[in-house]
Image (cartoon, rainbow, N blue to C red; front, top):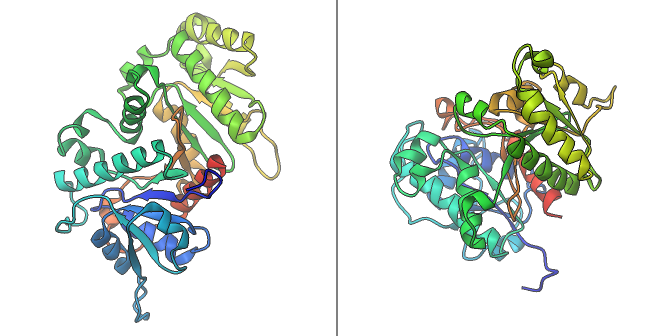
Length: 351
C-alpha cells in the first residue's frame, strides 16, 4: 500500500461479556459515516450478538456483519455493515455479564493484535472498547501482569522498539470538550501513587504532556500542575511534596521551554482549566498527581463525552471513558457516545 494511501482504524472488541460489542454495533448503526474506514479487531460471533442486542424489535433485517480478511478491506466495505477481522480463534460465545478467563483472553488477544498492527503501520490508530481487569488477570500469562490496557500497550511498544518498558514512558490523558487531564500515575494504590510524586516523574509527565498535547493542539500547551496535598501544601503546613518535588520539576520544565505553572490547589485548578461556551479556560491541560484526582473532574462533566488517550506510545490509542457495564450487558441500552468520541479523537490525532 502506498505511504500516502489512507489507513483503516481498528476498534478492538473489548470484553465480549460486556457492552463492548453492542456499543460498537450501535455506533455503526447510528453513525455509519463517522465509522467509515473502521473495522472491528475481534470475533465475528460476538459482534453479531452485539448487533442483535441493538436491533429494534420492529426491524426485520438485522445490522449486517461482514467478515474481512485484511484491515485494508475495511476501506471499501459497503456502508451500513460492520467489518470484522477475526483476530482470535473462533470459539463458543461467553456468557454475558460474567467475569471469565475466556473473555479476558479474548479481550487481551484483540488488543495485542491491534497494537502490533499499529506498530507495523497497518492501521492509522486503535480505539479500544472496555475490558474487565479481573477477567484479564484471570486469563493468566501474559495478561495477568498488566493492570489494564495502558500497561499492555506500553509493553507491546517497548518490545517492538527493542527497549525496556521503563524506557517507553506513557501517561493517561482523559479529555472531553471542556477539560483535559494527564495523570502522573495510573493504576496503582493511593499509597504507591503518593510515593511516585517525585521531581523526576513529574518532569517526565510534563515533557510527555507538552509534546503530545502540543501535537494535538498544534501549539505549545498551557499546562497547570495540581498539588498533591490540600491547598497545595499551604507552604509546607500540610505536606512538603509541593516544595521538595513538584515545584522543582515545574522549574526545570520551564527552563526547557515548557509552559508549566503551579503547583495549584487541586480543589480549584480543574475549574480554572475548564473551557465552556461562556468562558475560555486558563490552561489547556492539567497534570494531576494520581488517578482519581484527575479522572473525577472529567467524568463528572459527562462520561458519555470523555475519551481516554494514551500519551507516549508510537501510535495513537483512544478509548471510551467507561467500563464493561456487566450489569446491563446484552440489553442494548448502553450509550455509544463515548466510543464515537474516541473514534473522532483517534482520527484527529492520527492526522
